[in-house]
Length: 245
Image (cartoon, rainbow, N blue to C red):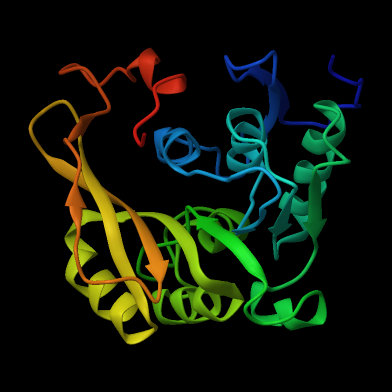
């Protein structure tokens, strides 16, 4: 059962189509896309495992992941005050305060909260565009562009947090795959499973990975996932489909 929260100007509540979960979004900020849904359906958190989300935004990925898995706890890092407030409201709305813990801080400061090598799973739908002053307001820019967190620091801090054999789940532009593989290898993260997404028009847009700290160099390529119809409509089946068995 969802709790009542007070909405502010620009906010709306949407149904996530999973276990009666809801999400508050603000049209003035960067709202989630199918990237978040795909990541939430792909990642695995085993019972008694502790996971960390880097760049929680509204909290949508962790909220969905908590319903599709049975984690001990998910710790969420969000650096932007506007999105911190939104994320807090979504945790309360969905009555998940006992499971989701928001850290209002830069993930680079994670060692203030737990030791290196203590986390089982890290996941992120990170900012991955080059800095462009014309892409919306400051909240949107930081959410989408590598202003506060670039790929090098994202992968480095993920590896530092993870236990040996801990897992990283990430969604990233397919065109930056070579860079992603290189930085993962440099930080002792071996990509073990991956798939690409097709935008419905035959264009490969994203790569989604599972990487293991200290893992061996052998990758399983999963089937390409079509995310949209030819006319651009989001495929509703993505909300419930699991992509990793």
